[in-house]
Amino acid sequence: MELAAYLSEKKKIIDQYLDEKLPSEQEEPILLHRSIRYSVLNGGKRLRPILTLMAAELLGLHFEQVLPAAAGIELIHCFTLVHDDLPCLDDDDYRRGKLTSHKVFGEAMAVLTGDALLVMGMEFLIRNAEVKGIKKESVIRVLEKVLEILGTRELLGGQVNDINWQKEKQNNESIIDIYKKKTSALICAALETGGLLAQATEAQLSTLYQFGVKLGLAFQITDDLLDFEQDKKDYDRPNYPAVYGFKKAQNEVGRYCREAKDSISLFGEDARLFFALIDYVQHRTE
Ligand code: GRG
Image 1 (cartoon, rainbow, N blue to C red):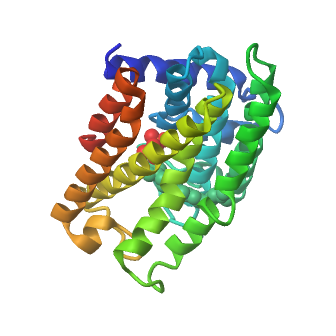
Image 2: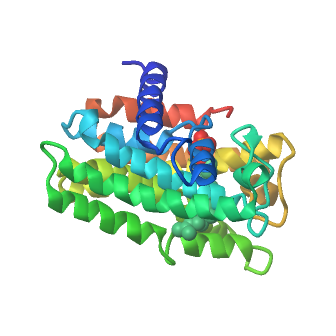
C-alpha cells in the first residue's frame, strides 16, 4: 500500500479506537472527561501509534494485535503535549489548530487531564497483554521501556534542559541531546513497542531504535523549520534553524534522513513504508 493511503487508513483506525475506548463525556467527572476527549480527539497526525503498528507488521504481527498499546503510546504523547502547553512550561494558546486544553478548561483541569492521560496510557499498554498471540513478558518489557523514556534521563530530563536552554551551553551537541530526549525517545519507544510485542530479536530492536533516533531528530528539526518559516520561533527555547540558520538545518535533516534509511535497510524490501515515511517527514508541511 502507498504511504499516504496507509497513514490515512491507520489514522482513522486509531482515531476510532480512541473514540470508542475513552470515557464518554456523560461519565463523571464530566469536566475532566470532556477535557480528556478534547485533548486527544483533536486531529493529531497519530505518527507515534502508526509507528507501533508499522514495526509490529514489519515483524509479522497483524496491526490489530498491537492496537491497545499503540493507542496507549498516543495517550502518553497527548499527555506530554497538554503539559508542555501549560503557562508554566511553553505557554501555548493553540495546539493542533485549536485552543489548548488549559485555554478551554482552565489550568487545573489541564494538569489533571495530563495526569489522567499518562495513567490511561499505561492502562492501554497493559491491556495489550489480553490480545491473542501476545506474551505477557513482552508487555512487561514494553512497560519498562516506556517508563524508562518518560523518566528523568529522557523526556523529563530533556524538558528540564529545554527550559534551561538560555542558561545551558548552546552548542550542536546540547541541542541534539535535548531533541533526542524530548522527541526521539518517545518515537523510539513507539517503534520498540511494536517490535517487543512481535518478539523482535535484540538486533531488530536495535535497528528500530537507531532508525527512531534519526527519524526523531529529522522530525524535530523539520518542526523547527516549519515554526521558523511561520515566524513562530521562540528564541528562549532551542530551535535548530534559529541557532544554525535555515540551510544548515535543512542539510542536517537530509543527513539524519539518510542515516535513518541506512539503519532500516537491514529489513530490505519489507521496510519500503519506512523509507517512504522518511521522505514524508523530510518534506512535510504540517
Ligand atoms: C512528565 C514524562 C513527562 C513529560 C512531560 C512536557 C514534557 C515533559 C515533554 C514535552 C515534549 C514535547 C512536547 C516534545 C515536542 C515533540 C513534538 C515535535 C511534538 C509534536 O508532535 P506531532 O507533530 O504532533 O506529531 P501531533 O499533533 O500530530 O500529534
